[in-house]
Length: 57
Image 1 (tube, rainbow, N blue to C red):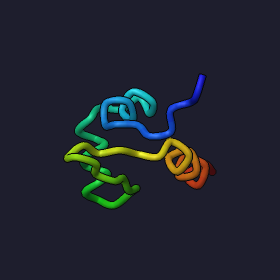
Image 2 (cartoon, rainbow, N blue to C red; image 1 turned 45 degrees about the horizontal axis):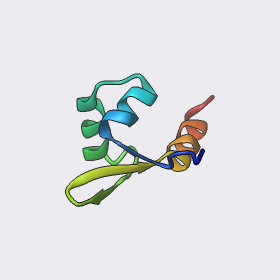
Image 3 (cartoon, rainbow, N blue to C red; image 1 turned 120 degrees about the vertical axis):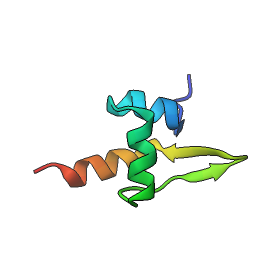
Image 4 (cartoon, rainbow, N blue to C red; image 1 turned 180 degrees about the vertical axis):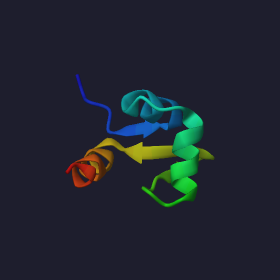
């Protein structure tokens, strides 16, 4: 089974344990980036994991 690399807003919010609105806010604040495909935001799970690691203290 192939692992899914791109997450939508709902999946990312679930993955991070956050509300969708928080993801939209963080996008607006440029805390991380995503790409829009056909009007739907997508996020590379590997990039999100790198971002999370960079936030660890």
